[in-house]
Image (cartoon, rainbow, N blue to C red; front, side, top):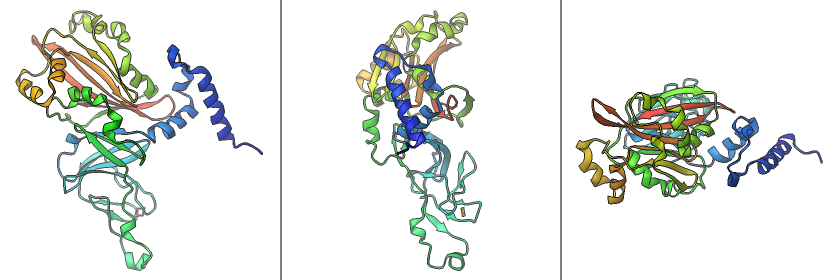
Length: 334
Ligand code: FES
């Protein structure tokens, strides 16, 4: 019997990967970063299966606020309903598949499809069909044609979604990483500043995700200029600290000890109240922290001096795959 070519290609690729990927020796072949079939497989078996970051809750603070995001290659609307509950919907009309929402963000209680005018409410329910009786008679059951919804859940203001009904609960997926995420986004009431910056880079999302997990080595050369500018005492600042593996693919670099407290003095009480004693102790000595929530959400906490005072900053980075060897980067400042 003739073998289906895509199946044969996939099988051969898997054999090639098994023969060339040696994590225990720290060796991976370069082709995985730009191979079209690797990309196809990772979209299907990775991004289509795990929890992915969608938005920060402060981006949609008011009822009917929404943002449009990417969930494993699909456009989704993330929305706070009139009841205050955050939901997400596939950005696709149930009639003939037209994208419903064509802006990046906004505030509206209803979405009207630009093609034939089907109307959906803030819960994703189909509430309006033009000329319903004349066109469809009794054949169209509106109650069955609400927008398709992925699973969503949140941790410390970070909203995640997945298409996988069988995925473990978000808290279980994040696991020990939650302890460190608390330092990043839960040490105080955090809000994002403005919409995210977005740009494209001709590189694999994997390179960026890997860099943020455990490549502090590059900073001594690539970022040596910040020592020349006097922003850090010397280019070898990243030699000090810990590399931490949290399971499920999550990991980070924790740069301690810092001789000075770099976060807001005015918020010390809030930090102490929201964090455990151990977390507050780590925060008190922290200057740099960079990590990745598997697979593609990264964070960076760092500090510099401005007018003699340490000033910390916190950013989130999302490495969105946009084809083999290409990604879109989303960056939020908190
Ligand atoms: Fe949306 Fe027809 S495609 S109403």
